[in-house]
Image 1 (spheres, rainbow, N blue to C red):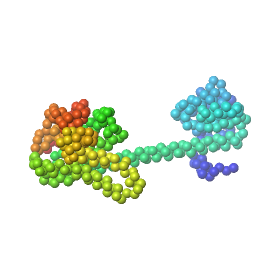
Image 2: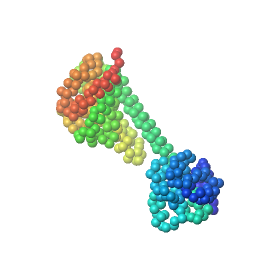
Image 3: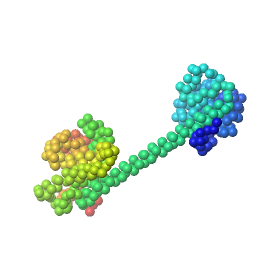
Image 4: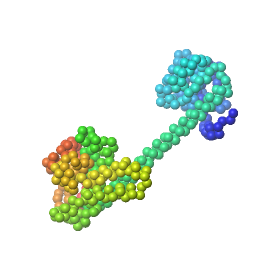
Length: 387
């Protein structure tokens, strides 16, 4: 009977298959070898110990024909060792035995044998079963290779998408920062400060939920967009060389809402032309943008409710906004501006500590103090170049 064409093609395209025969009787090794050698590469082992060594020696066997009744180490023990070793676990094993009791077959199958061939051997039946198991193994191997390729491809595309997302975020942040000639490496420093604070607080009971489940990474990634709303502030105010008037400062205070509204409109416009499936997936896809919107809107809020634009207080301020608030103030104090000199780490620390419970969440201040040396290292490493 001819083989199925598709299966035959799969088999014929494969390289020479190696079969390991394990039997302590030389005559059986000879008989089996003569039957198999016209089609397969044949190796032989006359004991369980030698079989285990042969199974991990090149060329590795694609199939093992294993006699059950052998001295010292019987076939069941050999099979158990093969299944315990990750390098031999997937090699199919066919038991060859003179036993025909059902419980003997059950024991072997429970240990992981794929088939039983009873003695005396019927050559056509044995060759058919060997071929069947080799074809199954080739199919499994090919499927495993394809799955490995798919996993690598998915991983590559995910990394590519993440890189594109990061570049897009950085481009938007740099666009906003390009209009403010004094900010320099501000977005890099503040993003790193937020990262330090978030990791310090990730295990804290008050912050665990807000920074868990991948949200910490989203908060850090979104941090550079905190000042994106400054693109809507007139140059005369944004680039003013000196302190702003009260009226100008009121206009400057609109930048958190401008940024948040821009992100909201972007999400709405993206959904307006989306099909039903895309719209249903929006919650997951837009999770990062919602965090960015949250940071933009709330990074100037104060713990005591005297911030802007919403005058939120205490825990009503999202955790992302609380972290960004301290990072932003620390950077502003430590950086030189045309209207002020850079402050020392000690003075900056004093100001932040004084703002605990008024400007800042006290637990965020405690986190800052715990990693203040790392803040100082970032400030020095990413310092703006001297002009």
